Length: 345
Image (cartoon, rainbow, N blue to C red):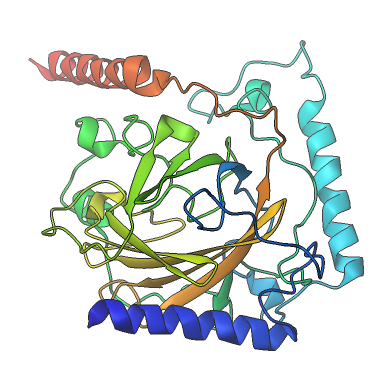
């Protein structure tokens, strides 16, 4: 019953998006009137290949754009110009004669920001011929409908006294090389290597993201959720509604919560919709339900772009977990011992 309710919410949200934009989901930009959906040997729409899921569109609508659902062409041009200027500054060489940072100052990734693949094309990608001001489209204000007083697992751990260097549990999952991104890695747009690969068979769809090589296995053909044992990225089953792949996921681990982008509890529930709309685009829509974290379900939509035929998912090597984490904890223990020695009479 709960699955049916969430699917109905997702369908209603997508219908609303199509109605508000004045066109149906099959009439998206880049879709020629005579375009035919490519299909696999099993007759399903072919979603296979490598896709770019990054986005320059804000996850939530910025406070300064309250009530504004879309950007005008002039605003798009201004924002893209600002992006280009930032990338030029980022690419400029650092002053070799600069002084050392002050003691205790934050040292960022200024010297290797571009190397870390934080570079993305300085352009906004439209959805249904519109340049949205936020990925989240429902509620209409484009903001997460957070429930007042909710504290996720990370917040509760911090409140209990767990510090960043008390143990590995005090570090984020990405630093421990366990997960990258919130809940489902491709749900929220990220800046670092936002590429994924889709592989299909008759009974399964595999979605693998480049960062940490997280592979989701979606079971098709009327499968049922396994007994809920919390797992990374939840338990996913899917079915086809016409030419749209609908994926329903539950059973997430609450430590996948991201206080900055997507707070969540163990009741987090996700419905995703993948619709191939052209040779180069998939329309990706989602609805999230989490009664602990949010007052009501919320939905979002964006466009996945096909990478070129030469594109590959690169091998992932997570040196943070291999080297940095042990160094951080060893340094903290050494500092702790030195403090205790200084305090002895």
